[in-house]
Image (cartoon, rainbow, N blue to C red; front, side, top):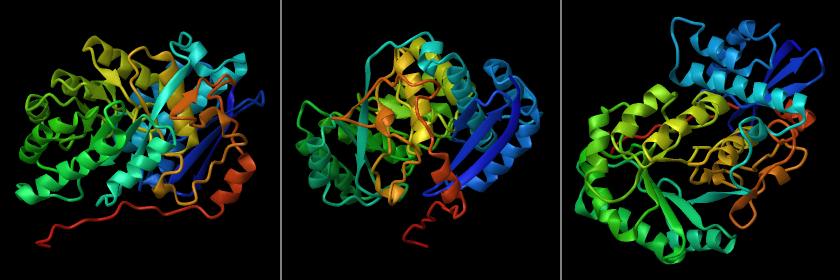
Length: 375
């Protein structure tokens, strides 16, 4: 089998899909994208295509190594995301060629269903209790919310208290038997992160996510870990196992590699195994489209130290929430869980006609720019 063609599709709301075709008619799909930089990643995907076209797609690991190590400059969000999309597509082809879901090729399933969490509140969440109660009514046993929007390096007691009050509203709606995750998004200083995680002990979060910016030294993250008993999670802006080792050394409880950013299925598996050495869990970051989710689920079903799966179905930032799948059943959340997919490859069938129609429109989604109150 040989790869014959590579195509990319820029589709709403902010996604990029990749189709890899072969001379035997087997096709694979991937989702290589950086939110707000889809066109940049698209260029990287096509630059890398010269290393893919004409090659045997079933040599997934060999291809991963070539795409990762074949250039003098490696890694980073753009190149790692391009590699991720190819890895999705190659595993999709490998599974389809053998008539098996990818998790069967990774050693078989270690669970029959995967727990997911939903997300509530915007960057300035309001009406948290009602929003969380709605997710509980839909069957979710875990909900994630933002802690805050932009925050000054040393915030006022009122600002800090507002974070705690919103979290207390969420906890009240969830009760003691469900779990609350709180995402800092790297928006607060290390000093405020240390203060806030201690305050948040009262609501017993499942984890606090990305309490400080990923580019800060690991010692800074370690100081947040040591400041309280709250489990710390991070990793959506880390792109390889080499970048995850320092944060595991810092003592995080949960790693959150993104299947579309951190090297795809192949590297997520390795990051999960690395985390297992530290007694840490993996909870993949996954706020993108259905192909990325399908790839993440293959890892979730075959990784023993998996914790919980993020998913963005129905989230406000997806607008009309296009699916681009023939059948949503393999990734459908029912009462907070997703059942083990049994279809070959990634387990989903892409509606190529819908993708091509959407690509005629495309998108130019960009991250918002914030300024503090001093300008």
